[in-house]
Image 1 (tube, rainbow, N blue to C red):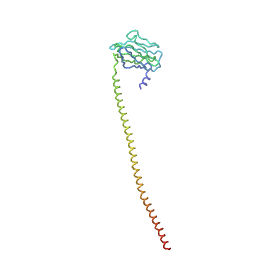
Image 2 (cartoon, rainbow, N blue to C red; image 1 turned 180 degrees about the vertical axis):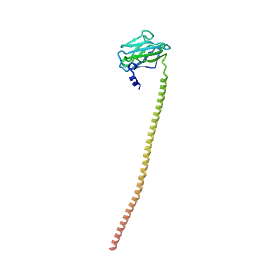
Image 3 (tube, one colour; image 1 turned 90 degrees about the vertical axis):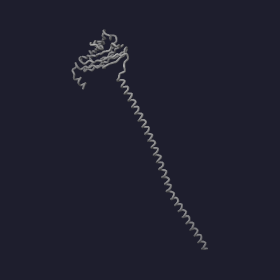
Length: 232
């Protein structure tokens, strides 16, 4: 919706400038003031960037840097005249500058203004610079680190829990398979014994039948022998 709204604006009102809300720097160090823009037009050869500075507690803003016709111009008046470096690239819609050798007196608000003819009217953007003896750690960074650490510990605990649970279940499954195999072995042994038990009476019956048959044969042979003697 925001993009559609901007495209419906007239070319003279379409340009929008973006900067950080605030930046921090230590005394003696350097800081980059980023500035970019959006325009409904192609980047013009007549594009220009202007940086203004309003000291902390001051009322008036002064121009400290200007870029036009492909050339950067640093104002010769003021405390930034030898400490500003142009690092932007208009083709990438970048109008950033670097301030070197920061000092406490640099605290204040910096405004970036961009003109991209025919887009010459639009909203500027401001960034506030805070200079410290040592750059303080932001509350959000500390909070994010604490939350990240807690989440890391929780994830590690969950990982260990599931790993231990997996090993335990695997061990239980192996033990169950072993018990099942032992039970199957016990069931097979009685079946063999019972089979042997069933076969034993059959064998005894066969032996008895053989013995009785042999006795009958012997009796018949004996009888035949006696009858022959009587005939003689």
